[in-house]
Amino acid sequence: MQRDLFFEDFTVGWTFRTAGATLSEAQILDFALQWDPQPFHIDRIAAERGPYGGLIASGFQTLLVAFRLIWGERIINVASMGSPGMDEIRWLRPVRPGDTLYVSGEVLDVRESRSRPDRGFVTIRYTVVNQNDEPVMRFTVTHMLRRRASGGSSAEDR
Image 1: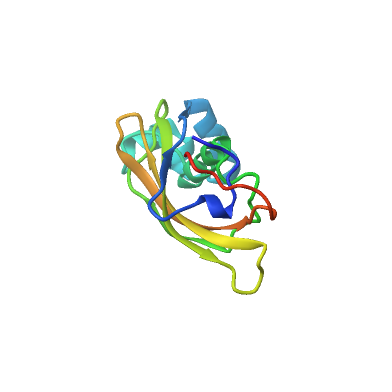
Image 2: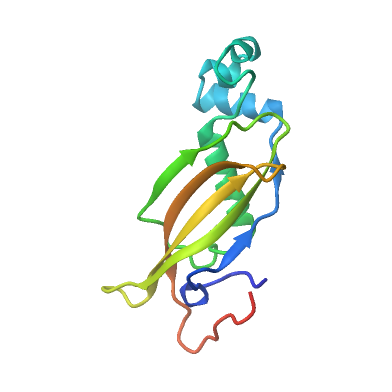
């Protein structure tokens, strides 16, 4: 798979999958204590009595881990100009200590900017799965991506 993609390299229907990352209990606790101190994220005893039957990761941590996995694949890195937003964020299943997360992406839309010829917009639906290939989260992002400088060649084999 080619990396360091530009706007022109994306086509509707193209998919990819990232490497994985395993979340430890310590990582879950550290994140939640700082950013999302709900009892089912920070207190093992309360979590066992709570709706999830044990400690779970914050959904925000899951989202950030997913973004880091996507970034690690060098798919949007070189061309990223930010994003006008995300849609349809859904937490589907709890993420527990020891779970390994992977992200799959599917390109839903590719469109050129009408006002700025140096960029375009690529909409990707991301699905985060655990080690059992069970979906734990879905979200859709519209990425604003730089076009390749004139004279560059496009990626043919992905």
